[in-house]
Image 1 (cartoon, chains in turn red, cyan):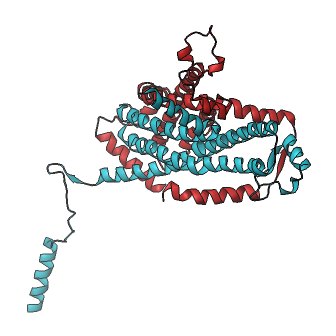
Image 2: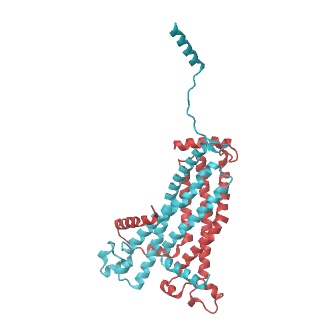
Image 3: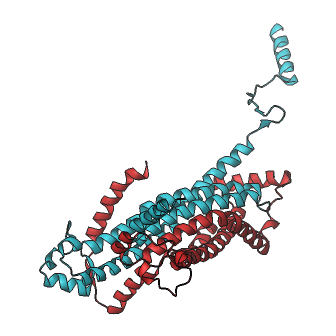
Length: 207
Length: 213
């Protein structure tokens, strides 16, 4: 089923859920301020960081408790997951943050630019048209959105040049550190693979 | 790129995401996962330290990760975001100052009812709209973040592991089926036919001789 066909169903479900939830009024001023602060300050770098930290707390354990595969696969899978999360979160957060800062630097409103402003053309390079800025009033969400989109373009390159090699390096480090390879056969030789294969099939069929 | 085209792109981004940070997080998140998975598949393929059997699990795991992430991101994250926005728009979840204003305006009994829209029917002042906007942005980001934690870090790993384990099992089973190495053609399995042994011949001979006597 296409995602588009699921949209009306999802809409009905969310309406029912929202209808079933009790009404609530946020009375505490600090909580109100915190919610507004989250809306204003939390953007894609912070979101990526939150997802990365929570991923580290959940995904390796899910991989280690995957009873559908043998123990070696479980360990390699968990090691690779941890490496992938560390590499992906580090580069993801830094690139998103850097791109948003760069877009922020180059999205000055015309009224903010004075004679003393250096590189005036560069400072308004990413500023949208005046009718849009009048409609938005506040450009902070726009800057974060454009910064995130630019960071995605950057990550097309960095995913392959930094993320993937870093994940490979960290995975191998974790495998070496845990001495995982002592029971795992050499991929170049045939005999242990066959023996290992039988073991894997047996374990998988038992599962 | 001509300057007007560049400005048009900027204007479209500003219109689409300038007032909706949660929507931007959903869209960029999906693209980010796809790109990341493509790179990770390359990393697994090129990693000589990972044995073939583990690669048979890790590659489908990574591909399933992107596929399941997109579906669960749209279904779960979008649903959380949608519920959060519906709660604020219908007046079920409001900051106290805005609720007090709405009660003062005489619409307090309609708050939270289906079809009620605080922005349309609440007659809010510009400062009230601004306050509600920032509250709504916060609820939007909180909903999107909780939804993405559940979808990306709990639902996706469970489903992708199931898919990858199934694929690994199939691949290993395929590796175990006998192949004729020379022609690379699958050898047809021969039915076992029991052939007569020397004992069978002797028994038959004795039985014949006993009959003749």
